[in-house]
Image 1 (cartoon, one colour):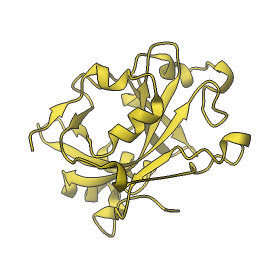
Image 2 (cartoon, one colour):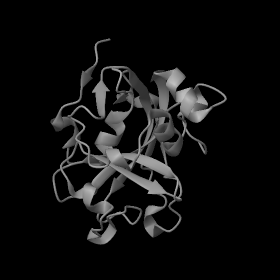
Image 3 (cartoon, rainbow, N blue to C red):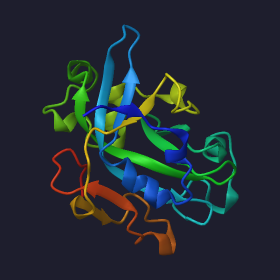
Length: 202
């Protein structure tokens, strides 16, 4: 099936949960300098609906050097570091000044798998990218891509790789947000059912 780079309108949809769902089956691409591609099919996402979402970095309208990227136009990459070593790749959604974002949690490896193995030393193809930190290492995503325009040429998402039916999508609580009060139980983690590359705690 022919793929194409997703347009701005895909990302500026007002409902971050809709974007998180529609991202499943799309292809995250990071080009290499030699013209090759490292890419994977998105199979798991988490939606963060700031500023009311207690699990969001922008909860309460918080603005810091790190979160400022979340206030940009939909279709911007939001990349941050956790635990001092793992990067996380997020897609900013909606309009400017409204800080919604979708965390890409897992990919099915698609292209550049040899390069992924060199970076990750994974024991299996699915282990290479079955977590947000793992996929960033495998694809070579780091803080230099924070703020990158997903309509540009540094990193982007293509559509048309796989059609995911509503029945094939599972949802559940997000991971690692025990501090988020009433938002802990929100079923804003979405994944493709029976997909081996989905991260832990299925």
